[in-house]
Image (cartoon, rainbow, N blue to C red; front, side, top):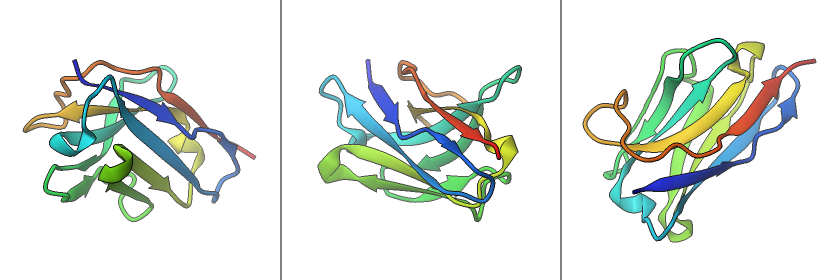
Length: 120
């Protein structure tokens, strides 16, 4: 089953930036999947944040549009999430996963995620 490994999370001040990485593992090729970034804040349900399709089109949740950018590097088998102008409400564990026609139904295995904390 397709699985990804997330990394790059950290503690950052409001207004700061981070770049998260999502590397396909176990022989999977990220290039053949639509890949989405998701996040789960304490006490809340996991929510979709951004998506990159196999044809390299991108889409974003309203809460992050204009601040976050998703991109792919097929040579590195990795999908990135550049996060700028971070806010305390962006604090969450961030995950990536493969999805089909709907970002709300990812079908791969969930990884460990990477913690992003936005605080002064």
